[in-house]
Image: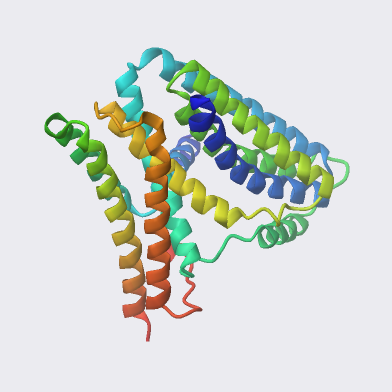
Length: 253
Length: 72
């Protein structure tokens, strides 16, 4: 049960966000240029990702001592999580535009249509675009699975299962509706997942340097609640500082 | 080849770093916790939590204040 809560659930939620973004691009390629090339690209990226998870995950679990591993995992999760959390706060505060899957889909469609296709050739452009999208978003999934699962073999199994479940659910839903999953509350998910990964980072790094939390993993919900409360308070304060319409490009902050 | 390696490296760094100062602050929080863990013991976890909370709030508020100051 402990591994389910600290590995499978966070892996499922975080991976679902990444799968939604990758699926949008693969759908755009398939709709505009046919399905053979994007499916080949997706398959190639999945094989690459399995190799990364197997090589890095196994090496981490078998070579690095437990306490050092907890500290490394904690540090990586914290750095990864606070980056998501910061961006989510700025999105909800109106400083960075909210992520819109429909806009991303339409932009990708326009770019792919503009690049053209000769029917007699294998569609290398479609394959490469799909491969890069799945590999890029999948690298984040691999990172999440490896860090959440590296504390034990059972945790690794649970983290992998969580990611696979998210993939099956998201891809299955996209195949059914044949459109980007715009109804998934992606911005809310990113906000929650950012706070969740940061909380896991704080928990594991402290354990790695020898500290013990009261109630062990039961303290994670408390840490998470504090991050969510502080983040939401920050959103409210920034909104009061800046009137609506203060959106700027993400690169400016 | 070097371009590909640079691109992979940039993607990996991009997973962890978006705002350089913010990332340095997070690394500083981890370093402080590690250094203080010998003397603080179990309390070092709470220290890390407090420092990271302060870091997140101060960083996003400073962005908001900077944008407000820049507005005509």
